[in-house]
Image (cartoon, rainbow, N blue to C red; front, side):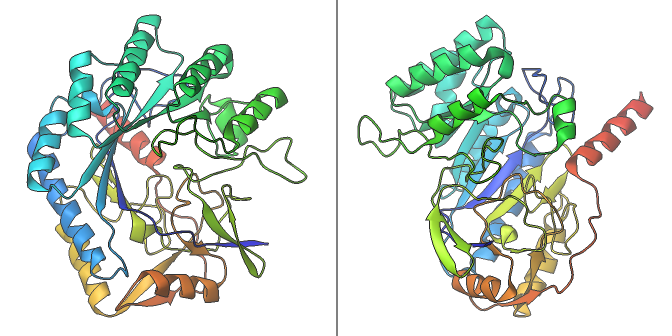
Length: 402
């Protein structure tokens, strides 16, 4: 039985920062709570204030980790580069906090001048290729990929495999592989919830298409030995439901140490993403900022707080109200461990976790210092507001105002 994840040390404290839903695209599988063309932008001074809070939060947590985790800011949206102050903000972050790494998730649809700004201000970039874009938009994206490749910039490509544009996506992957550009063939949607297929946020794939993903995700040796440019290692599901399973790897293709029964084994895909009742350290490795909602969560897709509820831990505009209670907990020498109330983990596989308290305690003590874990004996009822619900309420409020 699969009952633990305790892989090699995570390289950073991952702060995913959603600058807002405003996007230059309108993909059918990206619903209203993920993108639109109307959301207001948060001002530059507010972004700076939030960043100061993020750094203070990260430095406080660092005092109780057993090894150093540098802060990594990953900007997402919407489309982050659509924000008029985005590059000014990155320059501010680089000047004030030079020890922070910044990376960007983008659709890559912008001018050469903006692409050069991205390379200048971001340590790395992930370009998501969306086949529903216009031919002109996709040409801009390909031109920018070529530019990053020529500049030997640190980037990777997520090819979002639209079922109606399959040949186009397959052709692009072949083109990327010939140049040994790091890329991933990504299925659209991975929640396992049938309702997501009905609303268009996930696609149903044929067995032939699933076989393609399986072949793409096998470990491949790069044509040259550059560690930056290889095809992400993933694997299709095995067992009775292998014909229907895609499997779930770590987003960065990391090798995972997984406990199967009494033994720890290495692998690249977890056999299940149901961590209901597991003890999880997601709050030690992730933080999620949503500027439009003025909300801070421990994790973007998990959204579970220390009380085991789904919901924010505080406001992005008031980090002090988050930091002071946390400081008090840490100084007490005891820290609650999240016990997952959910039945699906869309991400967060980099967070060490275990089903059994004994294993979880061992993992916790390996990765922290000066602190004792406090385990919950009960699983909290699944309460609180998800991001989807929070955006629904926000949009309804805006509608009432107009």
